[in-house]
Length: 482
Image (cartoon, rainbow, N blue to C red; front, side, top):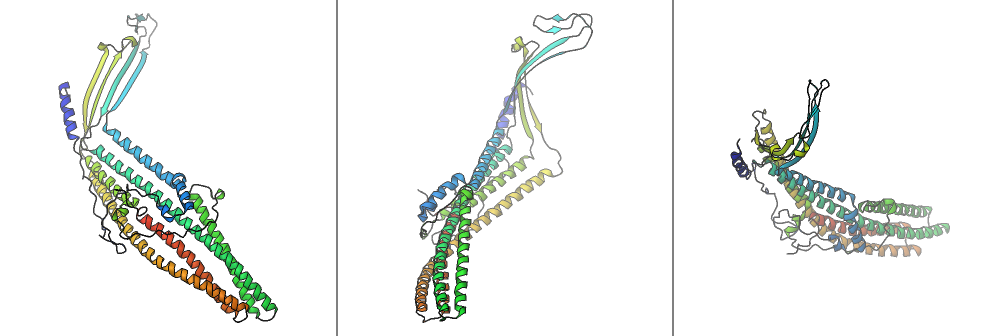
């Protein structure tokens, strides 16, 4: 190739580099319904996980929970790992993009060589080099080189651009994974916190129950000693008291378990973390009617699945690019001399440039198989994306149904607890007066205890269901600012 042909080659490579083989990405449709059965005003949504999620936990109005949630994003190790994975994915994008540009190398060398022989006179040349003298004596020579070389593989068929495209999509999927890990840890913390507050309520209920059963057992003991009640009444009272004390121990153990889980979520060793009992904030945010469909768009798992489709689509182009020849441009300019002092003089300059092409003639169908494999991988991500959307729709529907059912249950549980407490107090007074048997006391106290614990459970379920609904919607139901 002559020098005048070089611009033509470069222009041709630049023109060809404007095309990229393989299909351009277009988001496939997902099987979603235009509305939800449990909330009017919904419409089909597309992933938009960059929308603001906000500090959704503040909807519960609990300052202790707010403080714990602030620590999760900083100290949780799962979030830290996801953040590191995201940084790694971004670095890979930069690495792949660097292949679009030439590689430039600067090299330099110096050597001295000679051949064997008998003694003789060594001649020193005017330029400082030496050479063998007379009589077949040994000779020695010096060589110095310095050059600047460049190599560039033009992205004629778009293979590198498709690789960068896939790396960028994978990085965005990694970013969605980070958001998903954050939302998951925040939701898990809230659920464990409300579980701990339920355990606090259970401990208080069990402690009050134990005290009440001790009084009843003492009354029964006194009446048994007086011969007014049979021994079976005393045995029933003692059995009831022992069961209540066992329930108290179980509630205390459950509280410790929740406390340990919270410690791990905020990045602290369970042995050094403690969360004292506090008043349980009975505040469950109400779900507004007609939630906008843009909320579901923020689900990071949907966004991650969609980005993985884009990455898989780019790999089809990478596989198809293997059908076309690869081109490489090489060039260098430098100097070579036998004396260092005259190395960079014009007479000692050297240059070269050239174009290399390579094409696979026969590969036994390997490239065809790679393209088929890339298309199959893409089809797999499409199915996974659609399944993720369906699961998201199911999550929202389930939690909306649960929210409405638990609201009604909570009102009824509170009524039942109030009535059961009143009945238990009435029967205990009648037992002290000797007008009823202990069986009626046992029945009334058991019913009151079950009603109180069911009320605490219903309160915790309402709050944890609200957390799950918030997670199903991608983080709260606050609309993004327009």
